[in-house]
Length: 468
Image (tube, rainbow, N blue to C red; front, side):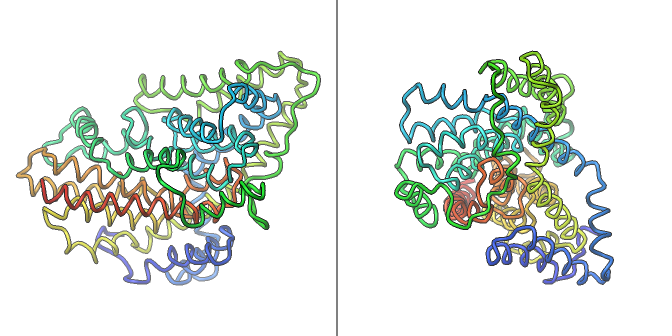
């Protein structure tokens, strides 16, 4: 489809339908499936258009990558539970006599520490801290919020992540940016202007310590957890299989907190960061494959039978299947949105708003709408960077100015907003999976905070645009 092509207002119907149905039915799989089916019928592809869409979307390298990544992460988490590593970590933290607030602050810091992967971060933080936060009566919704809002917002601000490489790669050839070094320089200078990402991470900490009071559905969820002891609402459906939440530690084998928990995490970080430095590409999936093999060898040396190790690995893979199914349908809906020109339509109807003073604010707003509608931040970057950044250069006489930095940051922040509060987003799905929270409950409790941060960011971009 040509960058200017779309099918008009109908192009936003599948994404809008998926979002509305998700909130009404509380069933994300059903909502996504219906949206995809309606979309292919609207495009005139007939009844066979739906299975054809699935085959073409899921038979790709990008989906194969996330499928393998999730399977290996599920294996690592299952190994953590079978060796008692998470229980050992929980006991280790409890010996520090932490308060309820400090336990949440540990999750907040952990989310920022695992900066190299927005996929691993929410799964790791949620699954690692879940037992501890349950004991301190922290709702699963709040744990998912903490894990979600410290994943993508942090990853988009760190220059040694795939996010930085992708965004800087899109900038090459725009204005005076001629090579990767110059593009990365622009990315680095844009970091202070990424208001939404900074505020998202900060607000989580302020909410935890009580400087910002709870409001909306999150307040009710926390009241329920503290007063009734219910970390999940009655009737909630946690987005994780029982195979991954009910794995008991292997009896009769003494495990080590270092070898069964910290060492595998160091393997993941070492491989991911090491490959980024050497190959200029963080091999996240390979990092978790290495950690899975490492943990399997350690478990065998500790006396756990090989058959049990393989059974645990299979249980871990089964446990992440609910998330994988949602991701598969979300990928299909994203492809459908591209075929229908959803983003092209949104950009076209808002293009007339863009003036030099309004450029950062309108760029953030349009990127946020696209990301929320499609559930993809990287797709939003690919669409908005070639549209907004050349405009910034045009207004700046083809020079790299603060207006350019602010525009790049606005695209990044708007993409992150949609990425971590859209029910179609992979990161929000993984946050629900890691925290074993009901997915729609997570979205409903997080949106008020994300929206408040987005509105504040929009106001600040308006002031910034007028100043620049």
